Length: 185
Image 1 (tube, helix red, strand yellow):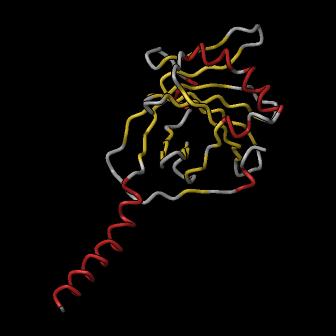
Image 2 (cartoon, rainbow, N blue to C red; image 1 turned 180 degrees about the horizontal axis):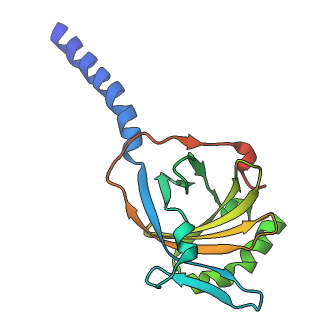
Image 3 (cartoon, helix red, strand yellow; image 1 turned 180 degrees about the vertical axis):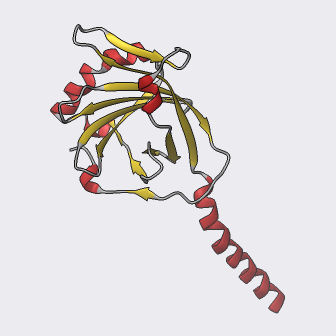
């Protein structure tokens, strides 16, 4: 009888110890290096840089970003000093008129970036000194490319970047910043 009790207790403890560890096993992180960047010109054309260009002043300042995919949820971080921030799928904010107008207005940018088979997310991005922008982040379904279109709320020009992403081999607990006030509404 003791043997059966020990087996049950060991099985139960093993489950209690391994279950939380497996919760993070499904987390997938991707590091995304920018390879193309650009912004619209006043004449309606686009200024575009490629990683292979001789001079890349815009690409030189765009940071490497990270994606975290946790089940159906996707998180974004473009600065080592920030925590991962939750992305809001376009489908959840499509009924907001302003977001729909921005989404439709930026659809021609998707053609420039040649990003196919992707899902689009939004992030209300607030910098420490209360400057705000809206980031439209498109991720292809294989998580190998991201396109980030940034629309500043100040009088700064919009810009875009395309990044190649690679999956990270490390799997550690990842801190996520969830602030309901940062969700686009």
